[in-house]
Image 1: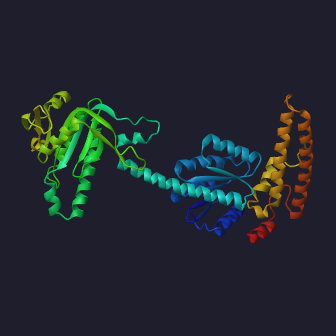
Image 2: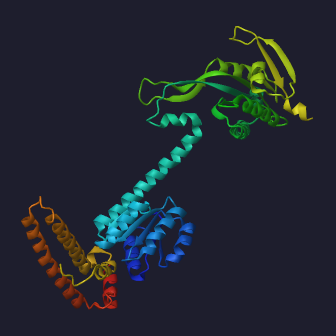
Image 3: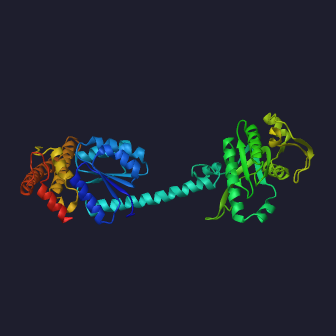
Amino acid sequence: MLNSKLMLVDKDGYTSSILANSLYQRGYKDIQIVNDGNALPKAVAESRPDVTIFNYHFNEFDSLILCNTLKQISPHSLIIAIVSPGPAFKTVDLWAKQTNSIDLIVEKPLSDERFFTKLNDLLKLKISSAALETKAQLLVKLIPEAALSALEPSINNEAKMFQATVLFTDIRRSTELIREMPPRIYFQLLNDLLSAQAKLIKQYEGQVIKYTGDGVMAIFKGMGSSYLAMRCSLALAKASHNITLQYGVGVADGLVLAGLIGDSKSDGQRLQYDVIGATVHLAARLCGMAGAGEVITTKKLIMLAKFTENVARDIEDLSIKGFADKIDCVAFRPYDLIT
Amino acid sequence: MKERYNAEQISKVIDQALIYQCACPAQVGKAIFELRELFDYQINCANDSENNALVHKTIAAAAESSHEIMEECLKQILDIEGWNQADFVMPESLKNHKFKLL
């Protein structure tokens, strides 16, 4: 807390040095004083203080407008206004309520109990909220976009059934590769690959549901989702050409069930968002059959998506483990099409 | 209520005295503002016929007397400390003395 960056804004050199001195004596070492309001936006943009302390002087409305400007330049910086009681306090209080640009107002004259305790509390709050924000940002990366709604207490967390196109990717010869390569190199290559795949999936409006170890599972929902999923699968397969970790792609569409699965009976146990159903199994099986740089999908999906790319091979009457009926499938090899 | 000092003059005194330990005129200024608020509140309350007007009148009268005393007190301490009561700027000698106290 004591290493927080403080900025004092005060047109009066005497009062600013009195306050800076008091803060310094209490252990705050990183204090910048700004006496000229015109220099303030630049100073804040450059040093991004944790807290800006305004010594408000009677009828100094310009400094209230500056508070708004500062909030826009550095929204995470806290603003404290020190104000004389009486009419000045009422003016600043009203401004703070109307604009939300001041986080705390403290009445003059300042005392140890009020000002320095409030400053410490505010800094503690800022530190803990910054830590929470960092965790929240990490959480957004760790869980699928669709699962974020489960964090909203007002939203019903029952599993939802809907129509979707499911896409899987999986690295070919991954066991051999991981045995041949230094594990850290493989890990780095895998991370780069999955990042690139996720980026492509997002470009085609898909959602990554999970990383499956050597690949990714994604879904595409809504109007035109099967077409977008096919375009995405071809882009993915094309990107698989001539790289170390080559992969196949499987795509299927149908009903899926999405929701939280895991231990929901006891507190503190882990749940995870997932999408399940026969469509998911089918897409995974088709992915398993696809060669490196190849996409396998069902004829039904191609017709539904009105997808007219040249088919590399027809796979009629395919028997798929777990499915009673044989399924007509097709394979695409996008790299072959452009060479 | 008669006011010897306006809000700007009192605020100027308070604005120049940040820290509690060396801000005695500011404490008096603060008390004056509080007495003005107390007086205004009682006047507004007394205008409401459902409330007991005599209670509010009594409080308002006490606030007015106290306000007069505190304004006189402010005048005297500003004189003692050597403040220029035309511009209400803290005298340099006092600034230096208070800075040394920190």
